[in-house]
Length: 412
Image (cartoon, rainbow, N blue to C red; front, side):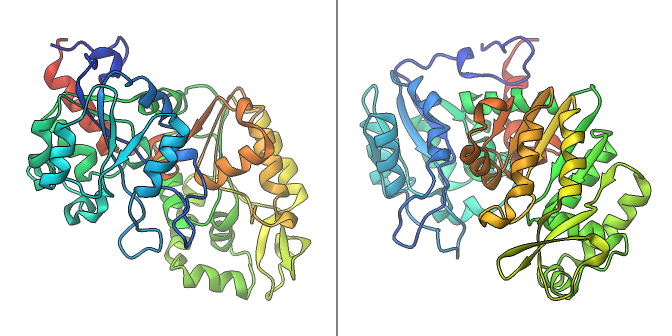
């Protein structure tokens, strides 16, 4: 019978025998790709290398997804196997199926030290359905594959906010543990989730306003933040909620992305949590590629908001530097354009100076990488949406499945 590591309510790789065992490893290799099928960012694959290297004496089969049905990057994992081979320095074999007879035979023939990557899990229709673990355990994928393995390892924190087949199904039928990356994510983010030091400051931006407004509501409901600094499209929503005229082009952006309903929610949050949600005092407009800085009551109707302004940068930076815990998610402006990266750059530098700093999200990590700030942050999360979901205290099915397995199998 396995025994949990002290202080953890799930099992880790240290808690089970892995030598020469057949391991089913859920990773997240989902990466930006160009039209020719080339992987543009290897961060996701690199993040799993510690786990893979620790399994050099096992027989490893990896499962991952790439893109969503209908998306341009919804494709095979052949390129991912090649890149993983280069990064790991060991051969990663690609199998162009998931649980066919050919795939199962390839799994059975693995020798100690071999690594196999199965096909994109989302090519299997049931993988795209969110269902309870016990239901997922009855799918063909799980029933065909689980008898071939000794242990299931979930190292894919970034997809563990989804109750999908490859994430939760195997925890019902196999010994199930957290991989090294998964364990690091939970440990690092728990310091933010369970932090009782003040002030705790969140800087939340980016374009996914609906998701972030919900996160803001969840964080404030559980008393998890002293200040929430809004930037990006999220700030536009809150400015509209305050009655600020953001200009026709920015209002149309909110309408076109179906975020108008978020304005009334933002209005309620501003009243309910007075003084905790901070909106910009000034912003930078995109005037044919040039930066035009104005107070928020002087926004011109035909120019899009592209960054926060200098006064806001100064105020927000002070909040972040003085924080006992800072959480940064989502750029403050159009970071890809030189004229509008100032807000993101300055806030990232400021957040890094807080007592404990957490940052996550693809664009955020890319900015941190470009600025050379990786070593300055206490925890960098590969989770993106999953990391902010976790910090809001919301249910994470993939992690709960690991905890449920541990509670079933372990002694008190």
